[in-house]
Image (cartoon, rainbow, N blue to C red; front, side, top):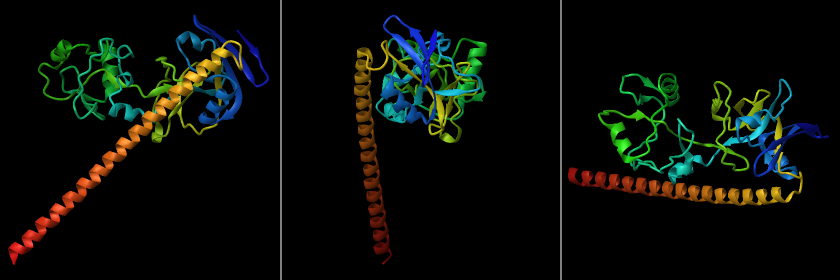
Length: 289
């Protein structure tokens, strides 16, 4: 059910813990501006927890609206620090229930992160991208391989002579309120990240999600706790979110410092190599004389 407000429309979502309200805000703002507005007046940009929530959010025909989903600019720092919760399996969309990981040393020991075209897990000679392999596996089998133990890892790798895709991928999409919701309802062909510049997500009247340029002015959807503005539950959630945001910022800062330290080490090694080359050249000149 919903009722009209002066600045938008209010929609109610019911859960066991909290009555959530969705507000369609009929103002055009960039994603960050919309986020700020929602945090000042409600709780945050909308988080969609499940498919049923889509029926409770009504976007006017022909329009789209920002929601809280965006990709994480610090995701590659998570890879560097091997954050297990940033990696998920294609078949379930979840992390490993048993916590099994077997990384190759160069990445967060034996699984390597690759981009481009590689052989997929079935032993044939067809080369596809990861998404292409996922599509073939889902059309003809169940899904891409999910490996949950050392025994399964050994069985899956038996006889392999080249790199193969498995169903593990990095989850770089986050909700603005740092919710753990894994629900996605991508529009066909999305996310596409055109020009490597589409890092925020809007939703259309059919509940389909599509990545877009964050600076693009769009209408947007906020959500808030029971009681509306100033509710104690909302305040507690905001405080928790702010703590999580602060923690993430500290992790990003730490990652940047590690990158800077690595760059300095590379520069130092380059200088050592250059010095060594000069010494070799000097010896060659002395030998010539």
